Amino acid sequence: MSDYDNMPRTRLYTLFYAWITLLTVAAALWHYQMGSFDRILLPAALGVALLTAALMSLGTAAAKRTAAVITLLASYLLCAEMLLHSDKNALLWLGFPPVLSTLLLTTRRALTLNLLMAPAWLLLLKGTWPPLVATLSYLSISLVGALTRWEMVRQLTLDKLTSPFDPECDALSRDMIAEHLPQEYERAKALGRRLSVLVIHLPQLEMAHEQFGARLRLELLQSFCRAARRSCRLDDTLGRTGDSLLWMLLPGTDENDALMTRNRLLTTLDDTTVTETGHLSAQVVACTLHPGESLPAFEQRLRIKERALMDSTT
Image 1: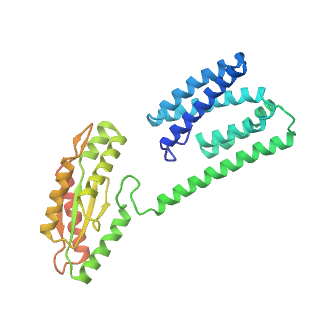
Image 2: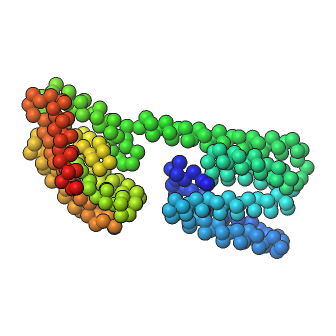
Image 3: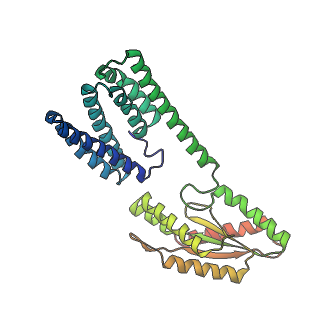
């Protein structure tokens, strides 16, 4: 129901749930201070439900979706109760439901729900507010929220399409590393420098995905990239060429230096552990550009080494 699968979520959303929980508890305390003991039970019960939702938001994607539903229903009940008993601040509470649904649901579902719920909220509204003012205010908040969310999704999609980095890890994407290799080749040829490439295969990724799911596979991939960054120079380039294949371009590096970099990477991986799988492991071979070798021939050698690494684990 929520778009946790469509937009990245951070712990800020947990803080958002916690803020709503505190707001609900504060409403119960306010009723207690004002002597409205008959109104304490609802916000107190909703506070417990919202606290549960805040804790669930730290869990899996399914738990996060459930937390969004609980938060939405509990907040709607609290808002309805406030609209029934509030006169001066009723218009302020009227803006709470569309903002909340925009944050917790997809743009289309939030806008649909806001339009369907509009008659109910307007009927609950009390005070001296003209019906036209209340209606336009509610619709304006709903439309602005939907447009804001749509723009956020559009910008995130555009960033993913134009980003040079792989969406899963801190490495260049397949297209970018394919473009970067010819650039390094031409630079090495023009400056008379050596060029080496580490061809890397991560067999743990397939095993982790089959046994533990996509979460551990992603954690392993990101842990490897962090370890690789620690073991390479600033001008070295890490890029992903396949699901479990990466290249590390080493400009100005001969075969001996490339082997030293390979050993340093393997040592770093051996010192890096993941709870479910233990030490990170990788198959790494060094490939150095031969004097006078053409780019297609060099790239063909890299592809052959990739296939050899993958065949050795099957």
